[in-house]
Structures are given as C-alpha cells and as structure tokens.
Image 1 (cartoon, one colour):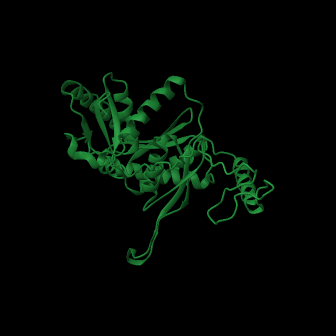
Image 2 (tube, one colour; image 1 turned 90 degrees about the vertical axis):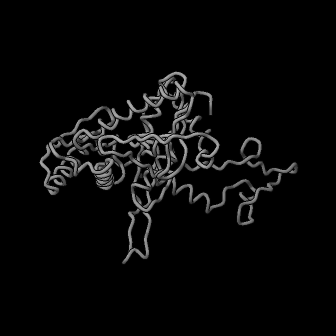
Image 3 (cartoon, one colour; image 1 turned 30 degrees about the vertical axis):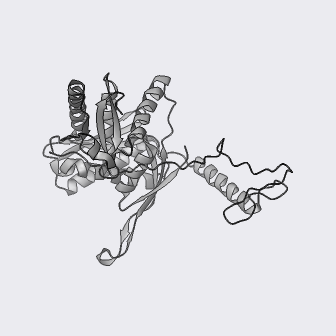
Length: 328
C-alpha cells in the first residue's frame, strides 16, 4: 500500500483524515509524523500538523472477510453525499451517549480519487506515424523521441527506490520493546496526575494493548473518552519517534476498561437501532462518531439480516445511518 500524506490543525485531526481516506480503523493504520502543529504569539500564525500514513501490512484476509468488507464499503460510497439532502427524508438523531453522556466525534473526511476517462485509463499518445503526441503540463514531450526516460525523471525514480530500500533496512521495533516504553510513559503520566493505578500490557498477535487499572481514573479518561484518546496518540508518537517510524503491529492504550465498556455499549445500541429499523422501516441517523466507533456499528449491523449501514457527512459530522437493506 502506497503512503498518503494528510494535514490538520492537530495530529489527531490529521490522523482522522488519514483513517477516512484509507477507510480503515485505528489499529489498521501505520503512520509517521512529519511535522507537529505549531503556533506563534497569540496564535496569529499557525503551522498545521503533517503526517504520512498507509494501511498497515498484514496477512491476506479470507475471501469471506474481503467480500463482507467490500459490500459495506460499497454501501458507504453510495451514501457518501447524503449529508446535503437531509430535507428529502425523515431522520431521527439517536443519542449514542455512554457512561460519559455523549458520543465521540469524528474528525475525518473522505477524499475521492480522481480518475481519467479515456478508455483503459491510460493516455495513448502514439500517432500512426509512430511519433509521440503526449505532452506534459509544461508543454514538453513526456518522453524523449527515442523512447528514453528524461534524465531528471529517472533520477527522481532512482531516489524513490533508494529511499524505499533504506526504509526496508531499518529493523522494526518489536511489540515487547514498545510495551516497556509505553508502560513507563503511562505510569509516569498517571503518577504526575496524582492517580493510583497499575499499568500492564498484553500482546495478541500483532496488537499491543497497554491498560491502566485502578479506582477513580475518570480524570485520565476524560469527557467522551477524549483524554484516553489523547494519551493513546502521545504514546504512538513516542513509539514512532523512538523506532524512527518503523514499529511493528498496532498500539492501543486503555484506562480503567473504558474502551471495552464503550464497545459493549455500541454493540447493544446498534442492535437496538437495527431492530427498530426492521420494525417500522424508517432509517436511523446516529450521532457523529469517531472512525473506530463507526466501525463497531458497521460490523454489528452487517451481521443482521434485512438492514444495512452507510456513512454520511464529513469531518466532525461524519455519522452512521442504519436503513432497510436495499433502500439506499
């Protein structure tokens, strides 16, 4: 998978945009911070955060998993522009609040690919006399007359291959090393916050989970889980820097079991809303959610016959719509 580059006013916003462009959950994303957001005095001049990201390389999915994922993706794309047509349907905004009272917002927008429309998708610049008529944007020919690649383009291609080879030579930081670094960071942070907690980690194949257990940890969870997500991003940034952007697997930080409680709540809520849609045939537009929460809803509803899901909106307004299957 090729790398893409995204920007945002914060690292979290840039990451959410990468998640939406690639269409994956947080644990499937591999990214490298290129530049952090900065601001001058009084915030008069600001520099956006910048990162590059790609889908984390994994073992091939089974045919059933790929088919289910593609089916859900097609539904999402078919409904991607519905946010501007709210007057044409009845929509009820459902409250997805959990123990903290409100749902999490998503900051990602999905960008479409621009594709050419010329037959097979490639420009054929050959005339019947064998001369090339293809021009680049500067008015020169795309290739020299002898079919040779211009030296400048060749040098650029060679540099790109060299960078990829150099990147491949860097040994990936294993999950055990990442666990020690993250545990130390999290324990020190909680101590500074005056919270009494015990930090431990578990490794499940290529997934590392670092958890803090204790009482009265709400300060480290935050409203709608905002603080625990920020701690997760800080931990990932530390790992990316220490590993020079070459870390194996995925990393999740949890505080007081919040993420598991959130997942359980969303699964039950999604089933309830799907049953309501089946009963009266009216679609339900849920509150805006983070990419990881939307994935939970898509997965749960995807297992229920007769209903389907689609995503609509962008940035902080991205939400899931549950509807009768085939109605979109």
